[in-house]
Amino acid sequence: MNVRLLCVLCVLVLSACASLPPILETAKEQPLVTYEDVVMTMAPPGSMARWGGVIAQVENNAQASIIEVVHYPLKSDGRPNLRKASIGRFKVLIDGFIDPLVFKQERVVSVVGTIGEPIEGMVSEQVYIYPSIIATGYYLWEDIQDFEYSQVQITPFFRFGHHFGFDLGFPFYRTRYHGVYNDRGRIRVRSNNTQSGSVGQTANGGDGANSNTPALPPRNEPRPPAISQHAESNVKYSEK
Image: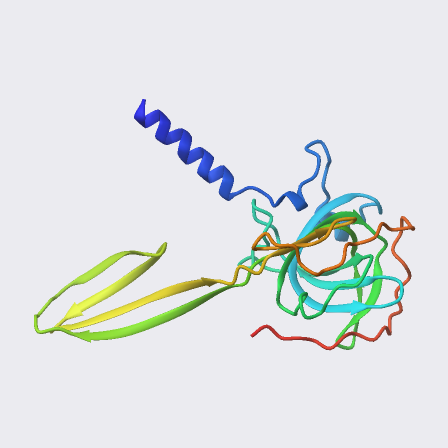
C-alpha cells in the first residue's frame, strides 16, 4: 500500500511540474499548428497556435503592439527550450500598449492565439517574411540565471580520490588530494518575475498580486493591421 501511494504521489508531482500555465491552455480538441507548419505548408490564417521564444524587440504604434520573437520549441510545460536550435522568427500582435521595460530583450515568452497574415520586415539589411500570431494570451517566464563557482579548501588531512554527487539538483565533481579540497558547482537563481495576460483581463504578476499592466481590449478586426516595413522600433533594453 505504501509503495502504491508513493507511486501515485510521484505521478501527481510530475504531472504538476509539466502542466501548462492556465493562460496558455486551449480546448483539448483544438488542433494547434506548429511554426514549421506555417513556414513550410503556409497554414491558413485563423489556425490556432501556441509558440514561444526569446524577445528580440518591441514596437508600439497606432494600430497595435508588436513583439518580435526568436522562435524556440516549447517544452511540455509551455516554456521555450533554449537548448534546442532556433529556426526563425515571428511577430506577435497585441491590442493595447505593452511596456518595453517589461517586455525586455532576451525575456522568454510564450503566446497562444490565431495565425495572422505574414508580415514583411527587415533583419539587419535582409528582407524577412515573419509568420505572425494574433495573441489571445501570453506568459512571460521568470528569469533563470546559472552561476558556476569554484573554491579551494586546504585541510590538515591528506585525502585521495574523486567524489561525485548532486547539489541543488546539479551534478558536481570534486577532487581531493594532498590536503587540498577542490569544489566546483553551479547555483541557479530564479527571479520570480513571471507575468501573464489575455484579452479582456488584467495581467497578473508572478507573486499573485495584480500588476499595473492595462487589460487588452478586444480586437475589432479579424486580421492583423498592415505593418509598415519601415516602422520605427522602440529603444532596446538589454537584460542585465
